Length: 103
Image (cartoon, rainbow, N blue to C red; front, top):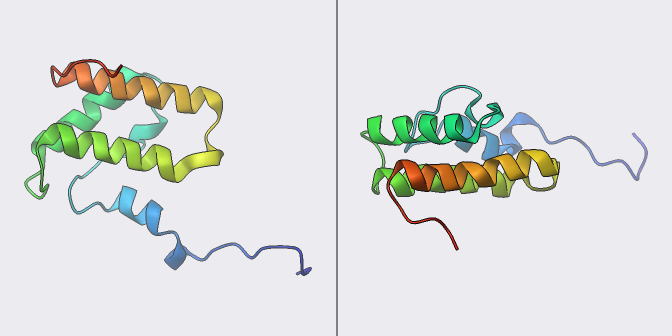
């Protein structure tokens, strides 16, 4: 390996992926963030949050936290289209829980 190359992190160092896949608060549907429809993403997160007996806060906060965590950790690896879809999922999640839209 050349000096300028950065070694790929091993699986132990991918803690954010581990959090998403094995959250103590929510059991997520496999591939939830890859769904094409923001409403389906929100509905899946809502189901997971409401079904969880391990979460520490109300279902809305748990679902929104997981979505925000995913967006923040994916960061620069998200395309503009993917980021827009996930931001729309936040609005759909607010609607699903009867919360006012973000201004």
